Image 1 (cartoon, rainbow, N blue to C red):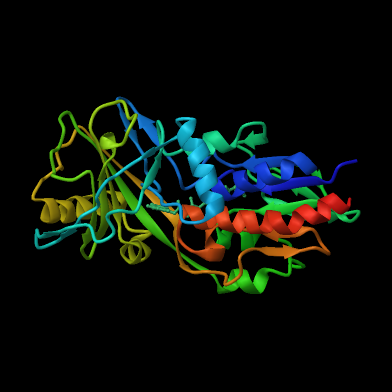
Image 2: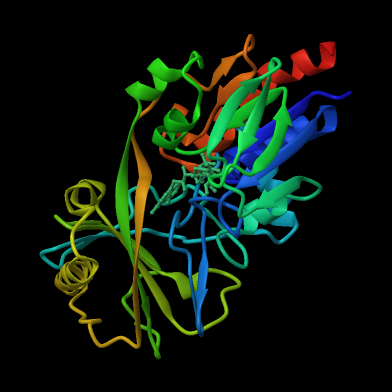
Length: 330
Ligand SMILES: Cc1cc2nc3c(=O)[nH]c(=O)nc-3n(C[C@H](O)[C@H](O)[C@H](O)COP(=O)(O)OP(=O)(O)OC[C@H]3O[C@@H](n4cnc5c(N)ncnc54)[C@H](O)[C@@H]3O)c2cc1C
């Protein structure tokens, strides 16, 4: 019987693990959402499409560059944006200090990379793992209604660190590292327009007390639909306002956007808000991944290394490097 492995989460870390381990084991991924990609997310609303999580990413390591090159060739990724200037709340704009580094986006939406990486994998969508219990030296996974999700030799969580900490049995050796990790939230405002906004940039960082980033999502390659803006709050501002009334958060983000761009979007035909409870890695676990060979429990994700799509890939690749020889030994 091949080793059975459950992977919790089908973001970049989960899918990377799946691709690496599936040739040597019986691998099942469980994803609580309807779509793949985790925080590399997109959403369609009427005539609008928004990438409401990560906006773009870079690839620095050889391993990640290889995956990115393949996905680019398959049309699942595109290059965007050329420049990311910085706006201030005083209305000033400074040029992109990091211009020259190639930035990538999913195509035709930010989930493009996840959709590329999911090929051939057994993925159960809308399946939330709620508990992991020991049973005859293996692990029994159940959902929130105590529905059985199966019995596995190895269980690997790629959920954000606080969710992984809640899920993992007390015997998991990674609890100290999980407790060391800190993640913060983010609010994302999605604004749908009838006409191109002509702001003078495709994407911009924002130096402001409330906002951190704005993108004209419809300038990304392959995006159909009417003009769409995505605006991220600062993470520290989101942490303070996580339980604030959503209408109030929306109003304050629109007011800050008006100050930084000189444009008032309050009358836009579509305005929506998304709250990310765990968006940004403030403090990493300090280890590239967590794995306990005795129990077969492990975890990985961006929170092990840093706040980037590539960190999720690197953490999962390192965990796969460790597990692969164990599977080959049988
Ligand atoms: C607003 C925002 C902006 C960002 N901007 C950028 C950027 O510009 N550039 C960049 O490089 N990075 C950015 N990031 C960070 C980037 O998105 C992440 O680093 C990366 O996507 C993390 O991938 P991951 O696989 O580790 O985790 P995730 O993408 O969080 O994947 C974890 C998956 O686990 C699933 N899950 C959780 N619990 C369970 C459960 N109990 N059962 C089943 N499934 C479960 C989740 O639904 C999710 O799909 C941004 C993130 C956010 C939120």
